[in-house]
Length: 229
Image 1 (tube, rainbow, N blue to C red):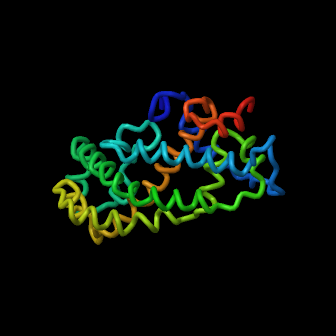
Image 2 (spheres, one colour):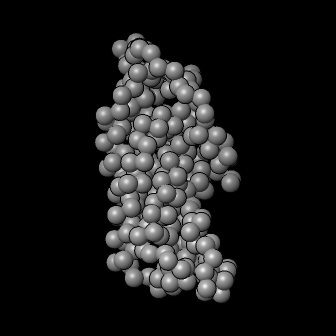
Image 3 (cartoon, one colour):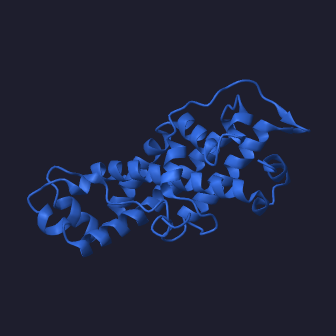
């Protein structure tokens, strides 16, 4: 991948994944301050700006599709063998149309996920904020994702299930019909899992951008807190 969704900050997708899924746990200790600023407040502001920026991008038309990190590949579900799958799902043109449709549907999932993430950012317990500030380009995103667990998947499944049924998209319906024993609910679950990953990739990309150029946030507390890191 050449850059993150906005093209403002060049960083490989593999590097982001390494940051988001780092095996080492972050140390936890007390809260500290820098001058009159709380490290906790700095992390909360970083997360707030990162998540707001990510969801603003993903909920635009073709937000997932146009993102360098969040475009969703066809879920594994659609590679499942079936009587008609070989004829339908092996067509490159059909697969691209299906992939685009699923990325479009994922925007509905992101709209449902956004307030869930915002609430988590407001209420997350941060016991070693300095470790998160110094922990790397996506350290805060990693921490938030670990704290939220499967919350986004659980929130998005019913939303995507309803969106798929209301869309009555012939491409999606044809693909599901080609798979033996697969329902719209199964497809919604599969898409929610992939959308969850995509959302966290975009949030991580946004965090990395903000760390690189905090001045773009116009947030004086965040700018001062990240200065020199």
